[in-house]
Length: 170
Image 1 (cartoon, rainbow, N blue to C red):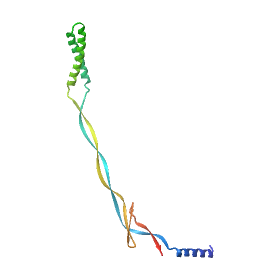
Image 2: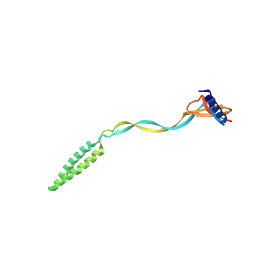
Image 3: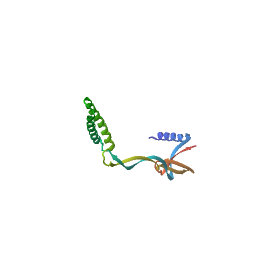
Image 4: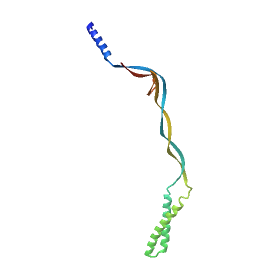
């Protein structure tokens, strides 16, 4: 760069600085206190409560009703056969067998197996929800002083310095 170009550039920069009414700069101010900020969160927390229940076990009982129906039908048929005469004897035998079958089933159902009922233990569980409140760290409040004024900036982590843009006007 020759002397004329350098002098022209220097003059241009000087005139621009004189003509300007303001300029800005960034200064870093030391933080003197960082305080954690907490938020309150409420949430439903599930928990499972289990307990044992004693239940009666049903054996089905269908075998007893079949035996009762067969025995009742046979007995009813025999009794009906002895009542009727001629062609009515057949009708009485069939009617006695049908009525005996129904009666035998009913008697077998009412008496069941005759054995003591059986039981088993079954595990049952219920889900219950409890509202719980807890505090969580949500950030930091950073405080510094710049030219006698307090500056407060929130951030995700504690700061060591706070950048401040300073504009000088003249």
